[in-house]
Image (cartoon, rainbow, N blue to C red; front, side, top):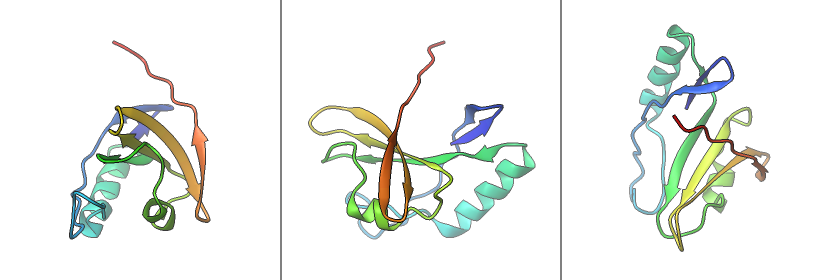
Length: 106
């Protein structure tokens, strides 16, 4: 997720290169670096990352907590079980703090 002037301005996909993509995620390191460079070039700030939990709730997993490398970013988790829910967190030092989300409709 990229921001400009305090609002999400774009979403730039980065491939999941985890061995079992249905059970975990791992951002492609080269693509992440390229995406961050492109965002800076376009005047955007990388504000966060998102991924889904198809079989669980929208809470950071132990893997999420251990692999949140950017404490300044927001981590959005979309849980699909038992029903679709979107939640956002700041993750630092292996701990998650939930953030309030605001949605605007067009």
